[in-house]
Image (cartoon, rainbow, N blue to C red; front, side):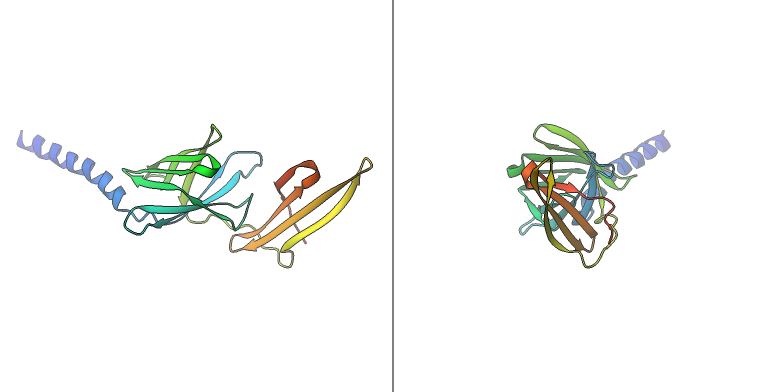
Length: 184
């Protein structure tokens, strides 16, 4: 009987220690994931978590495929009991994820405008895109289509995460279209 009680006490101690270990982890740094939207690779996001003065956390979100280099402040961010939550009021966006120790990532849902999308966040900035030097900048032109002049703007930016290109067609009200297969 004493042996059974000792085993149960050991099991209970192990179960109680697991959440405590998850709470002691350093959550600061970059976390990357992709929302399954229109393109095959998904809409790549980086959430940067920093320690807030006085305790707690703050953060920023960067959408690599929509606005590379633009870090949008996260209004509220909390990590407690293996659960990450954040909200961005101006975008009407929220995230709620649970820590998955075997996969070493937060598994959760990003919701914007009432549409929930799965989003897993793994540590790091993710895999870099290829780098194409000498193209950075804003390239503008006009094309004629069916007798109508259309403006096209190609925006190219290179960072430590590679070269990213976006196409805008203001006359067609299309902005931030991801360019794939960019080559020089």
